[in-house]
Structures are given as C-alpha cells and as structure tokens.
Length: 403
Image (cartoon, rainbow, N blue to C red; front, top):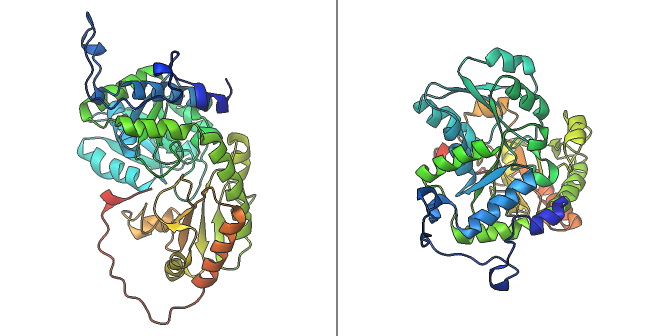
C-alpha cells in the first residue's frame, strides 16, 4: 500500500469489531486472562497492549517503515524512555548541538545525575563526530529539522557513522513527520515523535511514539512498562483518528509555509527567514534531496529585536500566540520565552535563537488570510510603544519548556 492508503488501512483489525468501521475506544484498564497464557501474555493498560495500542503500533511502524512501534504519554516520555533504555551509568552519547529545549534539559541535567554524559556536536561536521567518539559512546541523537532554526544536518551521514561505530542512531522527526521524511529509509535505528504535533494534528492530546528496529523498540517498551508513561485509550483513539488525515494536512501546510516564507523574506521588518524551502537556506540543496516537502514550520528574525517581538505577538489576530505546533491553527511564539527559555541567553544566541526570533507553525488556514494577518502584525511591530513596558517575567523554569 502507498503512504496515504497506509494512513487509513495499515494496522486495522482484519475483522472489524462488531462491524465498526472506526475502532472503538477500549476504556478498560484490565482484561481477563486467557487459559494457559503466561505472564508476558497479560493484557493490562500500563503494558500498552490494549486493542487501541496494538492498532496504533502497527500503523505507526508501517508509516515509518519500522519493524515495531510503541506509543507513550508524551513526546518527552518517548525521548526520555528511549534514551534510558539505551544508556546506563558510565555511558556516553553524541547529540546534535541545537536541540529542543526539553531534550537539552534532559541530557544536560537529568542524564548526568544518572552517570550518563553527552557531547554536543555540529550535525554537519563528521570530523567533530569522530573527535568526540569515546570507547563508551553508545548512541548518536539528532533532530530531522532543528527547533526553531530549521537546520537540516547530514542525516544519512549521521546514520552511517553510528552504524560504522556500533552506535544506536536516534532521531526526533517531529518537525518533518513521515510525510516529509522517513529516517529509517536513511539508516536510522529509532525514530521518536512528539505525536502531540503533526501525527495527531488537532491540538487536543499529548502523546509520543518510538518506532524502529524490533529489538530496540522491545527494550524501550520494557523500560516504559517500568516507568509507567503509557498512553490512555481515549488519547490512542484520537491519535489513531488524527493519523488518517496526516497526508492531506501536512502537504497543505508544506505549501502554505513555502508561500509565507517567500513573502516574509521580502518584508522590510524581517531581517532573516529560516526555512529549508528557500534557496537562501544553507541546507536547501540537501533538503531538496532528503525531504518530500519542506514542512509547516519556519522562523524569522524581526529587525526590532525583543521589543518588536512583543508588539508583533500583541498584534496578531488570526495566528495564536501559543507554544506548540502541528495543529490546524497557525501558532506563533517567541522561542527565547518558551521552548528555549531554559537556556542561558548567550547559548541561545550562539544557536541562532535571538530575542527577535519568531517561530511560526503554519496551520490549515488560507495563505492569503495568514499573509494579511502577519502583515498587519509586522506593521505593528515597527511602531514604538507609547509607554515603556516593565519586564515582570518570573525566573525561567527549564522543566516547563514546551515545543
């Protein structure tokens, strides 16, 4: 089956439950044991083996081209459980230097407390990967498109390097989705997603997923059984439903984002646009070869800096100032105040996340309406306020970062 057909039919029960076209919600924590069944045959909700889970696992594995999959209670549950399944005290990991803020906090704060070290490397510099390699290096972690600067590293090179050195390659492909990129086809061992975003696509659940080699997914699932980050049946149902429209949603978002990026790059209030579909993007050629679409995410730097960002966010009307992505609504946010608020300001700037940066998650609205809304907000961002505002923000809490 081709991709769009898999979205609808992959993993579905061969015999429809009581003839239902849509798989019902199995809202039960506990299931009767079958005669002769062993411990590993027990069906219990925390073990992620309800009928709703099993259909989702089969569908996600088919969409990514993996051998197996498991869903989790959030994207961070997917990331943390995967890394804890692969690494133990005394191990070392390589990681792409520009990561989502929550992941960065995990690998710089929580993993070191467990005796696990991480070296950050440029995803475009194989010499740096080799120089950072240690006898105890066990994994290489990266993102398909970085949040929020939309960098596209040498993904096939990372996968090959990991394979050649006996490392497990793990990629967060939330921004790309399997519509635009299927990392397993390029050699990756495990793919993680915040399924909250494009996979579900309706801004109404929090979920995660890990897909890849069966042996590795089994290890992740075993760790998940112990940590308890299982997804509830109703959220499984909503994710299952959302997946069926993934293709039409993401392709629409791809096209609208490209239209907006081309418009923004010409606007006098905008200093720079980060979008791999633009010829000016440093990895545009790579994106043309790797991606089926350039994605629904972009970011742009306002010439007026942080003050202009505040005025812009106050002025948008159609787009919503909210720190998530992948839903039907267009969302705008300031990464310096949301997803990467936990990073020290100097580090943020070194990663290209200035105080004037706006991140835009393109929804399903008409492109012309979005251009009109953003245009009004950009005009508003250039107007100085009548009275200087005071900064009453509370100290940042890295544990509260959202994508």
